[in-house]
Image (tube, rainbow, N blue to C red; front, side):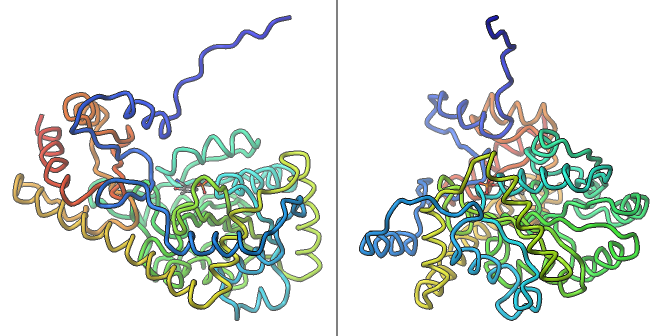
Length: 399
Ligand code: PMP
């Protein structure tokens, strides 16, 4: 009656950090996990977060349970940040919002909702996608397939492949889209392409499902980065949107995010919310309060909100700067190759096209830790290490 199981493999992303910690080299560089680092490669707590926490401490708030669907003020703030305070969907009360455990937990609740209420409808996931998506939806019992997304020739969007695969999806299928800063490719559709995808979803009766993990982090603008989900909502789609405050507010460990389901009317949204609560209650009962209060303080106070935007611009700006520096070093060291993708890609990552053997060389010989799919997190790179990284990349792709 004992419990005998096999050893599980290390996590493809978080397992890298464990290997990095065990490496004694002074040159080592962790470009595996997507977490923002300063030029000194130290973790960064936003100034505005410290201010919000100081205010919270002053208020002396209690630690009572939150409602199952989270802090009411947070729910209002988060949906307005996503869709805009003037959004008709918000004003008409057509959005069911539940505070959940950051992006991952919100995706998991959404997955449970799909498997319970949309059974028989397949979820279409981009190829490639963030490593955890497939595991989340597999565990939630949602059947999924992939659609073409990335063209290695152009290091850009495979528009034809994507549209063809979505056109061929059966009516009622659900399509997972990255709201901005596609992970791992850093390749986003243009506004024109988003309009085409939106029209196609209408034509083929597909349910759009956005994963918004980088609002404000891609371009530095909260509005710009919400273009796609806002467009789909304006065009009258029912839409599922998961949000995360891990990156844009640096609240990784606070596990703060939300799941929003935009419905056709208020009654329907109320029924959806009741079912989301019924899913969350036996799963984790209710969400943690600390991060919800931070987000609410920051969004609700004009000065803090402006300060947050400044810090977001600073973070996304630093990433764009190291992109430029990496590109310059690469082009100087290996001018025969076109490295322009490094500057073109959006968000925290660069998808280098390196093969698993080349990645093994990066890690084994140069102590540079990255995911096997060839993705590097530029949020973990400093200006002073850009040349070292470029030399290692050139060595790895040449050998
Ligand atoms: N979706 C995508 C595309 C991500 O890149 C991430 C974080 N790497 C997440 C969701 C979820 O992160 P978290 O659970 O910390 O919000």
